[in-house]
Image (cartoon, rainbow, N blue to C red):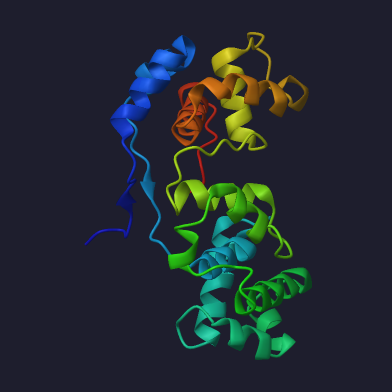
Amino acid sequence: MTDGRRAVRYDVEAAVAHLSAADAKLGALIAAAGPFTMKLKSQHSPYEALLESIVYQQIHGKAAAAILRRLIEAFGDLHPQPEQVLAAPDHLLRGAGLSGSKALALRDLAAKTLDGTVPTLARIRRMPDAEIVERLTAVRGIGTWTVEMLLIFRLGRPDIFPVTDYGVRKGFLLTFGRVPKGKPITADMLPKPEAMHRRGTKWQPWRSVASWYLWRACDLANNASPPPA
């Protein structure tokens, strides 16, 4: 039995070779971290993936998993369809453990799925990254970071650079910056997105792979900030 994950579709060997040749310091990180082993999550529709993202926002993973399980059970052991979410009484959604704001976000997600703002899985696979970000961030409660995680870990897009992600910023500092010995990393030490974009230009078109290695830099420093599971 497998866990439903699958390999990325792009050429990992070519990506690693390009990144190592383009940036010596990144190449050293790649050599230290070892093979690229990221697997894509079992691919739900964009609607289902965003529903789960909304449930998981800003709460502990175990609590979110319990809420998601109760929500699914309330609709017959399947992800509720958009029509069901819109028709559901508030007490059903709140009874699963959703906050008021998350219940509103799920209703907005459902409405925007029905009106076509949130595309189908077949459609999203053909859309450019920027259009996906524009479409999905129109949903209440969905920001750029959430869409970037979907692009990397569900759709397997190879050139996403989530420069607001704490782990990526920290890994960038550990790899390219100077961290005072014996001092904890604080928010003011983290690199600015502009500086990250400047260096990241040379990593195109493989910035998703570079980002994965920046997360690994945190692991190597024994201060893990792994990418979302």
